[in-house]
Length: 595
Image (cartoon, rainbow, N blue to C red; front, side, top):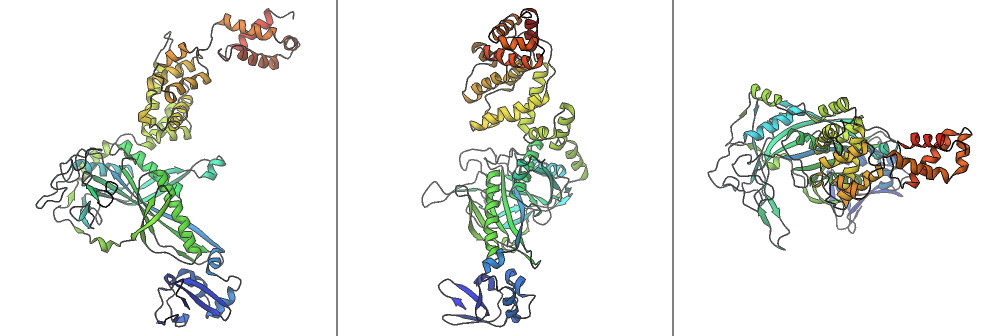
């Protein structure tokens, strides 16, 4: 029967048992007779039963009544599908990497970020008649280098296609891409991923490898501006024609955290290669997420998949996580109701952390792909590919191995530093400075603890910058100043507490004095004069005569620990704790032996 108020159907199983479901679950019905108040269909044996929910529960029975008998304890579709259903998330990503070439993919217009609207537009970008494309060689080399770094196949012959769609910010009415014969295909991305449960249990991160379908060299569209006028759309064509590489993965990701790890690894790689700044804030790296679920009935063993939803233009790691998590929950609810949904394109609302329908998802036929008649076959000989391969810089995996071997860093320390190019560069510069730079009295070079330096870079400095919402490029603590700070700390001239105090003053409070000035003028340097330290020891000893007697009775180690605490208290923490035991023992044994 059909309810005209709720627009839902109920399937009669027995005189007392029905399963309600929506019209979308019945789109496979061949024969329907409509009246004002009801819909009737032919017997279930004549239906194709495209709904996975219904098929899973009715296909194994010869009659509808038999299905009713098997499900008498579950009166509704929601409980039928919810009980015993397990879900597996399936995620595929399309990441658009904007290349940092000086000019656009097919024109000589500039690509500088932040230029006034429509000031970097050539006649070709604006789709003037008669203008022809001229391919940017640097963009081709960038695509080849990324392909090699991803262990992909670089093809000597590739083609450009026109992808037709009509938006105000696409003057030509088509985008030039590489749909059928790309320059690069295959490849893989290997990265580490650690779930919340793994972090709580302090389990190591897992290694995940995701295979790629292809890398497409293509041009970007312009930008529509909807917030400049209540009823008008403004178009900025500065971005039109900027070169992109679209990295298309196979659907092998299984969680939002895995997707985040994948994007971080790709972001790091393009930064190391120098082909893009990878800035998601500036739109240099944007992500489209394809999500669906594989749903399995644990009782019958049957399974089905929800339809794929594509969430467009995600421009931060956090948004990627929120969008996937929301889509998983939304599609789980559909599956519990026995629905598979529909293929659609959705937008993401950062404020609400939800997705919303944009349009039904297009098929490839809708884009009317065709070879671009203005661009001949792109031919790249093997000699040139080898030249690009030889010119590649040190890649993240290679640098991480070197950090562990050269500096003796643990795996997690090296991974944390190498994961961000600016951190790795900062650390290496800091290592050289602390190892060789002399301060104050110009003593010989120090034997440096690399783990301590790594901790200061990745935790102390980065943590304070995050608290102030500063990027690493805005770091007010120059690497030379941090080197001075750590040299003082290594030499025992500063306590760890005072070193953190100086870092707070420079990063959090904006103090423009040098590290040395702050340490001297604010009396933060530790007392290393033996006579001053002996004076503090005498004060502590004379204030605790009972502990002196215990020391001379043989409880040396216990009482030394006690007196160290008392000396630190008397000096307000401004003495080098490494010097205290020797001076304290000497004073106790020579000056207070009789006591």
